Image (cartoon, rainbow, N blue to C red; front, top):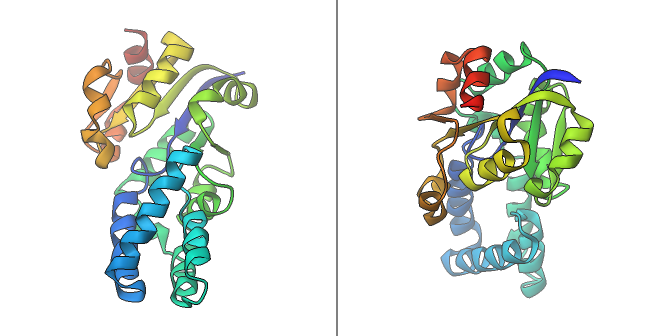
Length: 223
């Protein structure tokens, strides 16, 4: 039983995934053409609705099934697999993870597929930053019992850009968790945000978490 475990989301929490997507769209425009780039994103969104998480490589495979002679799809695949994700970490995100490691285990808690998401975490440097403490689920809000079994703790600090996921964690752990919401990425403007209660801590950017002490975060979760 750890005194405290900090759970970090990845996309738009520690890593600027919106910039990655914008870069990918420009690359697809160049390689596939704008019309087929739009077709890829239609496939991507349909697959996300089907699976419940983003699957970039899975969508590319479905695109290839539609266009088996389009060799440019292989170039796009290489672009994704070899993307320099370390260049897309938010400023001071690694410092925030390092700070959390002084309190107890820092754990990546993410949704995603079993190929691209681990690759992203590895190439960004986040796998090493958390000493390999990585959990990737299809729907992480449905697996909190497994999280607790793997990383039992008296208290949790959950850091995520999606307010509804923080709300689910608060519902599950109650005052045992401090929910931290860095207002980064496109989900900040999601209509669901307006219907949810405020998190325990709201940050303008992930780096602002450095101003918080361990005791300050724990107290915020008890209020």
